[in-house]
Image (tube, rainbow, N blue to C red; front, side):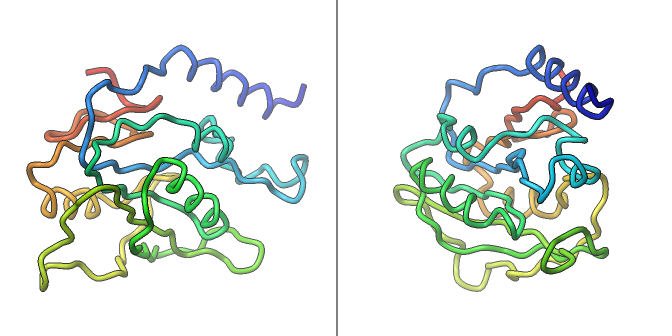
Length: 194
């Protein structure tokens, strides 16, 4: 077996040991960065920069099948890269949300890509039920210029934005990493035990 495949399999087994069930309570705000599985042109030569080398990934079908703990009135903020846009819209729909808009995170460095060298990610916004949009004049710009850091780590400015827009709404970050953050319930294989 290829050493990279062996390392990936080890990480997957560790994930299975660490993962916990989604919370039973319902949330009015879901902030989600799914572990999208990209299909490179070649699984032999195209895996050098794949997300699979950093964490276990899931197929779109597996992500869409998750039973998300969304309240009847809920807003979803869903991260997607350009090649996964259609998949993200499909997941949003499968979870019962209607697409509303998106923000573009413009990074300070170019990444990989087949058609373009990607320098941005998309944060899609969807709702279900009755969710108040930001008050007129308080909306953020649809473009966020922020440096990238470690693989798949998102700018903390987005979380602060969500906290200001929905200060009292119960919030869940799915596929989170790191430690506890006040005011958030965090779920994922890379969340440190509290």
